[in-house]
Length: 195
Image (tube, rainbow, N blue to C red; front, side, top):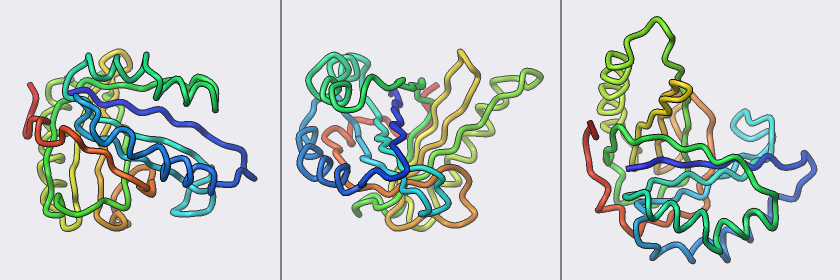
């Protein structure tokens, strides 16, 4: 499993109806994209849930790297580049994935929490602790799915969770509204730890 996200920060006066329309019309195009475990079409709106910015920030879980490559070099991502410029694409090696009690519902919210692994910390211990928190989070009411990834270049763990409704106030990280979920190969994402 590979996790991927690009975050496009938009001007403060940007009409977010444009993004909502974009997702409504283009979102279903990936509903049958082979190798895509899921794509959560996330947005942040300035002043909502503490967001300081307007942002379009879809998050992906890929079952195989070839699918991610097919998307990045194909017409879908080229449309993003044409309309917004080429954003940096963050990606992480998947460490774990779990379904939650609300896995059958349409998620309406997401959280993203980045956690640095300090230089003095044993990376294996940090990963073990993060996997334990992933399993605990997966049991929370309202969780659709939750994933954990790592970028070993910068030693950063990423926790991404989809929620049936809004995320609990105690949940750390950036909060997103989810406008659409494409999940053609959700069942192909291996559950549990990936190492």
